[in-house]
Length: 466
Ligand SMILES: *Cc1c(COP(=O)(O)O)cnc(C)c1O
Image 1 (tube, rainbow, N blue to C red):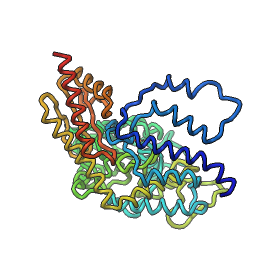
Image 2 (cartoon, helix red, strand yellow):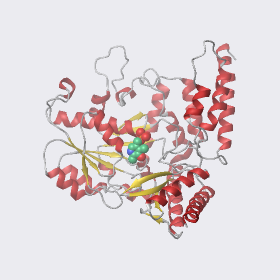
Image 3 (cartoon, protein in one colour):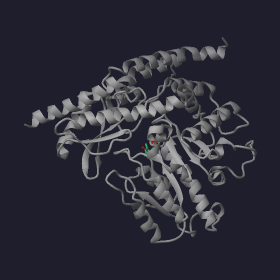
Image 4 (cartoon, rainbow, N blue to C red):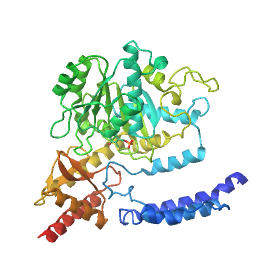
């Protein structure tokens, strides 16, 4: 072993040992964190010591002291927000990415990463039934995927309106009218803010939170000029999908660019039995999704897909930098498709996850999440006093327990008991306990644990109230 590698081996062995201890704790540990930031601030804080510490000791110190402050997000009993765990192949590949330390912006400099990511990109387009010649960029999450795609939209819409965006910026140019469903994820608004496009118009939604195409038509007809329409695959509370075929048809008649935020819902396209939920979504112009949610790779990994590669590369590429070695031919350099120049090879864990699962395995994983949600929903709906507020046809279940105060009390009790973790939220004017199934490892036992945890918390709250 070379001296160089030797210096890493103790620290890496310590990290591998601690990682396995952590993973082994997941089946039984209390899901929520047991220590506050303030308590942990004491062990990690204070002035930076003058003298250093050996690498392996640093790793030991981190593992020992962080443990009580960790949330068991990778556990099959975690149902909070929409997060996802990590597949073994993806986690191990992520370690390799750190060891390889490839700055992955240029094909010429890091051909292995470029080849792996380009292949992962093609596999994704096939799995999700998106146009095979679309550009794919690996970003940090769906927020950035949406931002990246909407930056391409902004470039195209302005240029088509006769405005030189690159030279003149936004000021004085035509205004882009932006339309979102009433129940879009708020990070869409954030992306529009990053882009200087202002606050979007909210298109009314139906009882499941789906944008209503006739309302979109009415609102688009009320004005004129360039327009961007953002649709959603996967509503946080109901799991619902906007009616893509109709909404895109409306948008096309008004010459709008259509973007789809499919952070966790785009993956329904990979499952034959669920594909009807996303019917027509392939007709959009751009799509944003996460790999760290439904696919279950480590943070942070999102994917931007844009059909108009000229628009994407104009929005994200560098135009005058001479020191980069630019790959003018073919699929283009990674840096032209994402906001970052220097970045890790974050598409590698995506390749590893897809290769480990195969297309059947991806479909089985996504179907498994939806099946677990459906079981949790139907078993809890059978409990007297529990209401399932949404149609459970994907991975989300929104529960209410009579009045808001009771729902909040049940949520607090579930979290305190620690057998599972779910978040409270508000949906369509009511407090809800939201169950989100997004971890590949959630199995029948975990489904049973979730049903028991919620029903016994409800029984305890009822007993205390009577
Ligand atoms: C999670 C989520 C986002 C934001 O994704 P990040 O990966 O957290 O940046 C956007 N839209 C929807 C529908 C989401 O579920």
